[in-house]
Length: 175
Image 1 (cartoon, rainbow, N blue to C red):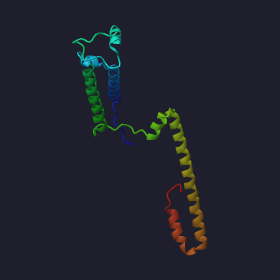
Image 2 (cartoon, rainbow, N blue to C red):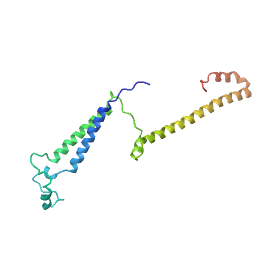
Image 3 (spheres, rainbow, N blue to C red):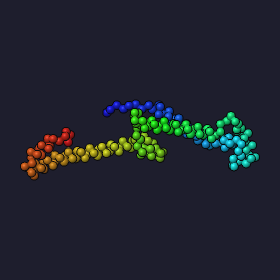
Image 4 (tube, helix red, strand yellow):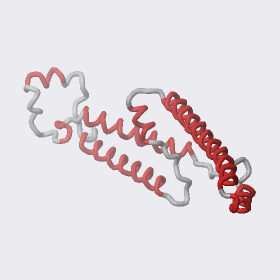
C-alpha cells in the first residue's frame, strides 16, 4: 500500500473551532441585538412600553457613543464567519493537500439518530465477515464442482480428455 501523506489535523481542527466560535458569537449577538444602540435617537422597541424601558435600563449599561452598535458587531462577526468558511472550503478543495477521510452517509445518519458509532463499526465488520464466509463457501463449492465436472466429462466424452486435463492444469492454485 502506498504511504499516505499526513493531514495537519491540528490546523483543520483549529479552523473548525474558529468557525464554531464565530457561529456562537453570531448567535449571541443576534439574541442580544439592541435596536436602540443601532439607532440611539430612535424610539423604544415596540415590545417594551416606555415605562418598563427605564426600569430595565438600570441593569444594562446605557448606550453611549463609545459602544459599538449591535449591527456593526453582527456585521463584523458575519464577515469573520465568511472568511472562516472560505478558508475551510479552500482547504477542502486544495488539490495539493491530501483529501480528508470519507465518512459514509449511513454512519452520519446512525450518529444523528443518537446511536454509538462503535456499534455501527462492529455491525459493519460482522456483516463483512459473514459476506466473506459466504463468498469463500461459494468459491470452494465451485472448485469442487470443477473437479466433479471434469470427472464426469472424462467418463461421458472420452475424446475431450486431453482438453479437460489441460484446463485442470491451468487452474489457479487453491481452486
